[in-house]
Length: 593
Image (cartoon, rainbow, N blue to C red; front, side, top):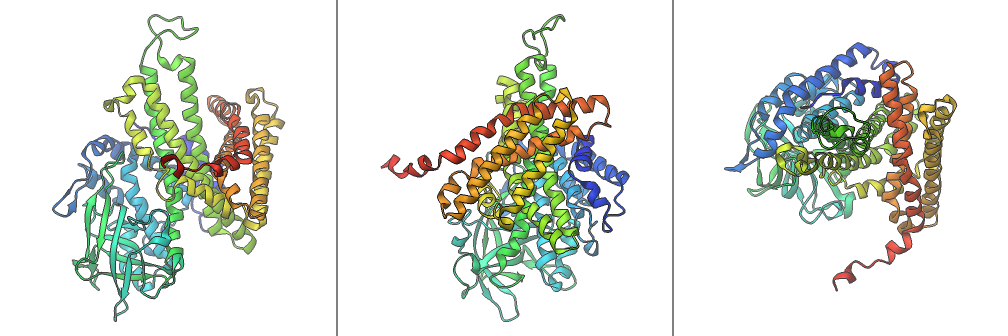
């Protein structure tokens, strides 16, 4: 059973992550609190009543490939069509194309609930939303007129075709090719693997976004173009024409998200799949990154969504399951395991990590929204840099936390957690892909250290550290004993992050790239944990006008996270500063010689 935490989501949006900044803008002037609450309530209802009951069914059924076509699990098609009838697919899309023009923050909140309902379900529409954004920014008016409205409505779904057998994260190795036709279209040839929702029966057309190279393209990523390749060609009147030269060659048998078809796609077996250029020739990577940046935050939200579902699952079990006698429990019989200190420890860890992921993802969405609303160059630069800084943290830390929380959920279930019937194992199996796809978390760490820290000459990250310290100082100034050592522990972590940041920036300035890369992953975790502690503390400070139980709960979460989990930051700083030599000295190939 899943119940959408609408109140906590609304509080995080409004009091922690700055939704009010958007509501003050002309673009979102009509977005009052009543409308926000109505959207969140209905999204939560749909997730709990329509999507969540199908999660286990989809896990068991999978997505079989028969006769060259993929079928989705029972109830999937009906749920999807109810979803598009509700207008959910076009939340953030341009109203001129049939969208609602709502901020990314609201889309992020709704996406969290849909992923809690079923990660396998939510990932398909997520890619369509990314395709819409890429087309809005880069496609010609002719392509928009033919495809955009039906993608916005969800009548058609979109995909993202990057990966090839020889090219995982390294797009330099892409071999899919495109040839020009005399009529301005292109013929596409090649194979793509790991294509999410590459084929299915939810919609009558699928619009593939495909990276490929032209014959005279420059080498490397500078020679990649992006093409729109529909499953069925579309006539001038909008009706469907003949089948394009694209087919699904296989469906992967995966560890998790069994309800999401992961396909091998083949283009051009019968003379070339017909495609249309998006953007300019050899500039496709910039267009695709529009989708990828959207998808990276969305994947972070997947980690968040699964964490919330796993926490609720474990909490319900811990309250019902009786075993032993908890300290101080004077009642008859055995105690619910939720009363045992070690179970409380794990439940607190699950809940605090989930709330940290929520706050970081929503803060990232807020920065994206603000970058779109900024009217002056300085404001646009600031918020674009803030979104750039937070995106790898939101993607990586939230997905790591999704795995950690789901694993703790199994532990709370004990032996029953290892049995598939309880459903606890599915959360971990589903969550485990999220740190891998849309750029592994190692790649997110490299992106953060090598590209995001140097923004504005390092001044943006230093200003960010100053903002975090203001929160720590506000906690100290509150003089509330319930915070315990929150202020001191948070201030110490901010100093650890500052020291590690100085090291990283200096290493890059001196050309010690390997030293910086050796510490990139612990650096991202250090940054994420510190930010998470600050946002939990901010939430507790903003709860002074909330009912006493909510104030106490949020203060407890902040205190527990800062006094326990933030203890990692000193070790992470040491790892960053001291481990480069030993890491670089390790010869993995010699181990199998």
